[in-house]
View 1 (cartoon, one colour):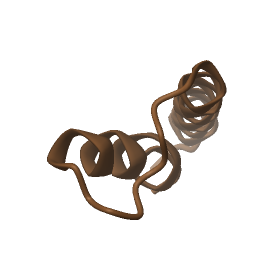
View 2: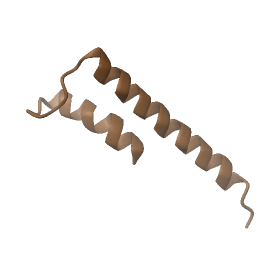
View 3: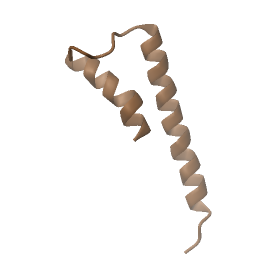
Length: 55
């Protein structure tokens, strides 16, 4: 869900030209990359935690 909120939604809004989409600036791209890294990190941590749980 984190990746959708912070990365996919703004990029999709910009590509479709939605009126209230964020303007493509270096800061926007930077924060989208931060959201993507956070989502990837949370996914990786979740996989590590769940791997240790036995049946």
